[in-house]
Length: 85
Image 1 (cartoon, rainbow, N blue to C red):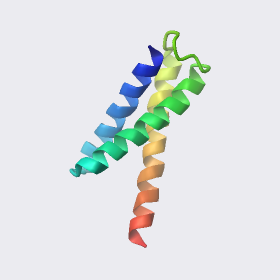
Image 2: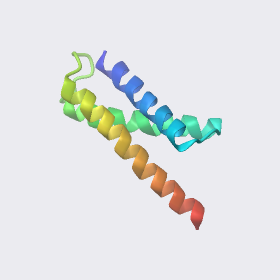
Image 3: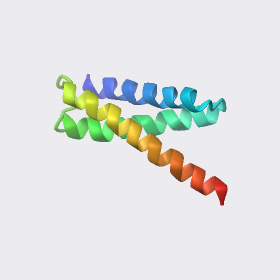
Image 4: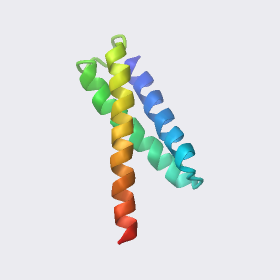
């Protein structure tokens, strides 16, 4: 159950970042959602001590949000660096 919730949290954070950055390309929206899911899963599962089937702790939810935001920020600045030259 916690795995599904972390995936949803990461996808929502990724989608919200594309809305905030005003990115309207569908491929980029999916890419940002994927990066958000990856970040939320990594840090959320670390905070939940690797438990994927057990209940989700509040610390894991916060870890998922922070992980998704950090992964998206890193990806966005890396992507901008690659595009600018």
